[in-house]
Image 1 (cartoon, rainbow, N blue to C red):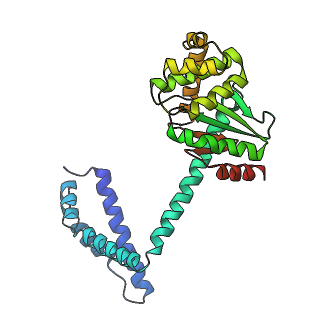
Image 2 (tube, helix red, strand yellow):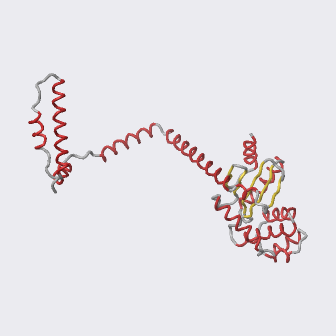
Length: 286
């Protein structure tokens, strides 16, 4: 494959420039001028006259032993870390700090994008102090063991603070019995109002054992309600819609487990004790 005329001319020009550079450098040093024509001819004569020859010449050049260099560098890094192991912990701490900051930014963006659905959906039960200066939202499942553990912690926090509004998002994800219990709670709210829901919620979350139609019928009777009438509402389209909306909201918020809490701009995933809730509330009020 013969080089095009333009490429041949370019090589000649480059060689001429190189020869001229030798002349300038030699003159600057005070030595005799170089025969530029001879220098250029000699340089050109050493160049391959085809692209294939050029590639072959390049391939003949020695290649640095990068494997040996990498091994040497790796050994130096290893030696340094063995002598200074605290650097590893500093790096891990820095990574966790950056990851936490990144997650916090993402959480805030998710809350902002779904603010009304989280805090003002108009259908979720509101407890605590309805006029509180802070709002705590809980996504929960009645069969969730950590939700059961969180219930007294949340109750204590609300009583000790006295100025926090609580919103419960029914989020049954642990099977048919979870779904049954959530539908029952929402049906009680629709039939008898917020106070009845609060009592049903408290009884359901503290219940140990299965959630069956018979158990729910008995609970309805304890609440002073007609159990058969409540059970007849479980497949109500409004209840189905509320649960579907809660699941869609949880998905948008990247919530996959229970309990999950949102206090204003703070995401709290998993079980949270009362003192941690109090600390978050204090920080939010500052």
